[in-house]
Length: 620
Image 1 (cartoon, rainbow, N blue to C red):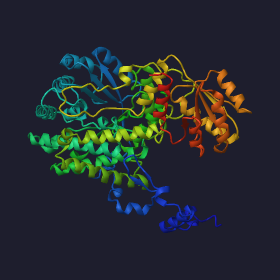
Image 2: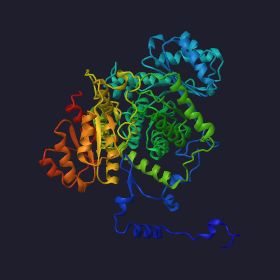
Image 3: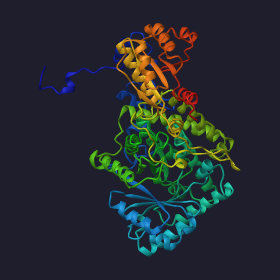
Image 4: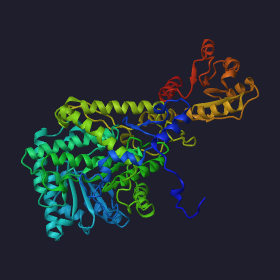
């Protein structure tokens, strides 16, 4: 080989046709689509490989950062996202002290969640922002029903402090239709709520750095919607606000500049990256259709929050791994600011430790992984570019369906959006019940040593929907783990841990594989599991199980041996314990005829099966 040649010159180019011929040959007659094409949660078909030629049909792949429709954002020199942490405000002085403290620990975006809207006054706002430099960081507020008063107080504070108004980044969001979707009703008529929003936009327009319209996709993603559906519903909500604002006399450019979007980020790593790129692209097209004159008006400003659907009570430190990859998706997708929620936020109020970890997760991505060094790192990736295009296409189709129903509000009133989200959530939960979708430590590979749940707030853990005089059916938040957690908490509250005894016998490989499977299966319910190396005879195994006072005996062997060993073991137990066969052996019907009722396998619905065993054992 000629060492003077460049490396790639030593390999001849291979065409897509040649690749496909090789793949087809290696499949040996198996169906290419069934074996190698996988589907995302939203049903997008993803090929096993993409090539440079695939970019030829994607016009957006040749764009640069700053080019309309902003699929690549506007950052040119890097990816300088803001690290946000929220603070619940009940005591303004204490909230200010906490804000000043975390600003010294790497936070560049503050979120103040004001619980009592009546407490907002010029004096309390001044106390909250004391010694905080508004031009240096982003400041976000959340207050129910007091947004106009807060904007007025902020305008006074910024004026008196001499702040450079063009440099401030402040969000005082109002999302009346999002609140309607979440609660099922508003405290005022919908038209009045939209009037309030238009007045708020007008009040805030005097200061360019204040944004006050925030459609939030977390409402949909935390209820079970996938990336495409979340994007479509959020865009539809944004379009409804554009219609409401312009219909009330707000200039399209003024209206568009008042927006800042929030998206949830779930576990689908690459689709979530592509979702944010697709979101900017579609919003730019929507805003342009409203007749904006300034190109910058069409830029979507995005805040991302780690999702809650996949967060768990048990084995909670796994939540850190989940939020880390989610934060990576948000950053690589070009979110301007990111909130990593503490790992324990779904089951209790975060403490200093969990808040510190959440901050440091983003600092690791920025300072050690250097994800802030490159603008739109997904650009040019054949896969991400193709995925972006697919999400654009599918989200647009769903967006148009909603528009055909009359827009977001009309679709919400008809129940279309809620029904689709409910169906998506039900499918995901069904997949989790059968472990097609895995929640590590909850429905698969539970921690055998975790005999108790972490300290938690039951009211925060489970969202109960109470009947009310609802105008629309609400979008109900949920988590994939909630039914599994109820199951395991019931075991804890019963005051006993049923003992599951593995009666391993016969073929070494099969008994070990089935024992490991069965141990993981029953540990999901919080049962105590006792594995064994193997028994020389059925009598020895049954005697050991009964001496251990086992509640459940699981025989683990090979299909061929079950015909004799399972029958013998079942008879020997004398029904002194529940008897389970690990697997679906050909002799199943013969064993059923002998009285064996219980079989577990990879085809079992784990949740329903364990709920059945809880009932049999008297655990409610």
